[in-house]
Length: 462
Picture 1 (cartoon, rainbow, N blue to C red):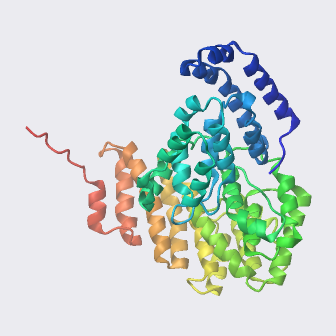
Picture 2 (cartoon, helix red, strand yellow):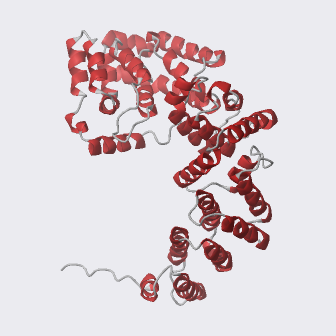
Picture 3 (tube, one colour):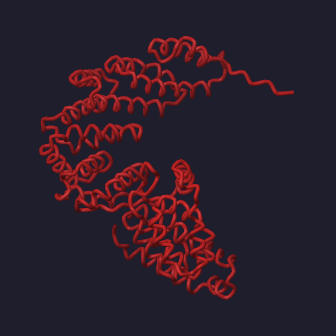
């Protein structure tokens, strides 16, 4: 985590001063009515949120420092309910839907709310966050927080937020999913990049989630580049599998500029030359990650190729050389198909290397179909020749099934557009599908008939 830049603290101090000098606060202190506090919320919280969004985009590693800055009592507890939710959701949970480790930041924010002179008003906005945070935490951890509270009303409130229904794993999972949806449009992800092995073991999962999140959105990641460059140069953690995976992930999604890419390539070279399991670990992680994100784009693969030294004699180099031919020629080109065939036949059919090839080709076909307009269905007809070539090379049932799902999704999109069964477009699509889907083994003849059969609406009950 990083300290908060002065340009942000200056704005926060100005907001704090405005709060303290405001008529809204004066009225609230005189009347002590909830509606007057809500007036303060309406006037000032949006200002805090706008700055928070700016920091989250430009300097995400400063978010915890930003949140801690808001613990100053002169902010009157404003925006802390939102921050409490952020702290609840940042904690990683295990298969039992419990935090891997105690969430100290959640505790700190909760204690600031508990000790706020405005607690009676703020508590109306934090109940669900506390319920989920407590559900994910251990009983001992919760008890330690509650036991420190002297005020009986506050203690009773906290105890009431520990819901018995969340003792069941399924209900905890459902509760967390529903709660998370409320924050899905917000950017609050951050991470801590350690320089020692114990820190890496603790933070690796969170860093992985953070890097994936920042790669998906249109964020300004300029301030992450020097941090990532320093991280990939950390000698003390280079021998750890978790570090290797994070280095690969960095290579896939982040351009560290010339110096940074040189450092990352040097680090990857060290791991590949010193670890006999480097190739297996690479492909295992690569495949698992590809599955989790629905495939890597061509740009992702090119990013990775920039930091993988193909002069090293190993399976990784062979794979990257093959990919370079595919991406430079285009996966529909005969030379690309030949390169895939040559590489694929060198390995066992179900090897992790061949799984990576299938994932790569499937991702490319998926991206094509996802962005193909229904008016361009003739291009779908044309690319089926390429699909056939790869199905013949791979002879893999899962690949065929995944490809069928992609094709069927596109066909259904076409049928939703071309509803007139007598139209030329509908008839062309129907003729093509009934022929190729049966030939490929995607569907039986009966199933293709069902696909194009008009669904009868049920008669209304009289």
